[in-house]
Image 1: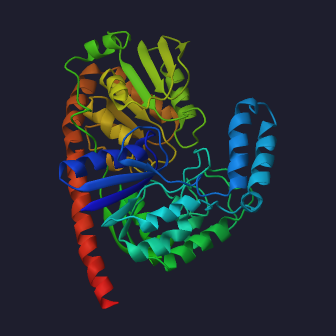
Image 2 (image 1 turned 60 degrees about the horizontal axis):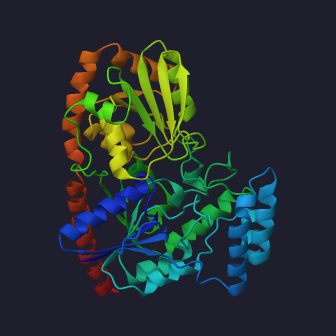
Length: 447
C-alpha cells in the first residue's frame, strides 16, 4: 500500500509525532509511506515539503524574502505593522482577505498532491497558524483531492468544523453556523468576525467532497458526527493515539533517572509539558502555577518543559525549572522517566499523546476533566480533576502525602499504557485504510 500523510511540520508536538510514529510502523510492515509537510526541519527523505513558496509569484517571493531579512529587527512594540505592510505590498489580495476576517487558504503548493501516486491520503492538522506563513494547506482542493484519492481526515482538534478556532472551549456555535463569534482571538485567530462566512465556506467544500474520518477520542468523534463534516463523511472510526513503547518505558530506578538530569534524588518530581506553555491558551499553565503555589510546603522538583529558557525559581520548598520546549523525543523520554507525576491542566485537549508517554515512563498522570483525556485514565491509573487550581492542588497533595498510593498507581499506569502501543494504532489505521480502498472502488464502479 502507498500511503501519503499530510501534516504541519516534522518536529513539533503530539499531532506531528503521530504521523511520524505511524510512518515507521507502516515501513516495518512493507508499505510505502511519505509525509508532506508545510515546514521541514529534519533531513529525512520520507518527508517532503509542500512548495508553497516556490509556487508564488516572483513579486510575492521578493517580499517574503524581504520580510525574512527584516523580521529579526521588528521585535519592538508596533513592529508588527511594518510586517503587515510588507505582506500587503507582496500579496495585496491575500492580505486584504485576511484583514477582512477570512481564513487564509492561499497555499498554491497544495496542488502538487493532485499529481502524486498513492493508494490513500491521511490528512492530520491542516491549519498550522504558528508556521512562518501562518498555514500551509489550501482546503479548497479537498473536493478534487477526494475525487482522485480516498482521503482520511484525522481530527487532532476542532478546526475543520469551526469558523476559525482549533478549540471552541465551551462554545457550541459550530453546530449552527458559528454566528457572532464570542472570541475571534482564539487561535487560529481572525481579524474581524467572519466566522459564520468561514463556516459556510467549509460547509460548501465538504458538500462537494467525500472522505473518511478518524477521531482519537470518543469525545471528538461525537462532535464530528454533529458537525458540518457529516456532509462529506462516509464513515468515522475511533482510533486512540499510540506511543512507541520501545522508546517510552519505565526506568529501572527513578532515583537514577533524576540523578542523570541533575535533579534532587530524594524528592518527588512533577512535570508538565507543552510548546509555548506560557502563551498557549489551551494548556492551562496559569492553573498549573497557581496549584504549585498551593502545595509549596512540600519538598518537590517541578519541571515546566516549554515554560521558559532554563530559569529556576524557588516557590516555598519547591524548586521550579522553567525549561525550553524539547523536540528530541529521547530527551523528552528522559524527563518523563525522572518524573513521578505528570500534570495536564488543559482547557481544551482532544487526546494528549504526552499523557500516554508519561504513563509508559511511570509518571502518574493528573489530568483536567476536559475533552478526551478522561477516556485514557482508568481507575487507579491516574487522577482526574475539575478544572481549577484548587482541585489540581488537592490531587497533587493526595499523591505527595501518600508515597505508597503514588507507587501503586505508578505500577498500574505503566501496565495500562501497554494498551496504547503504536503497533496497535498502526494495525487499526491499516485495517481502516484497506476497508476504505475497497469501499472506494465499489463507489467508483457504481458511478
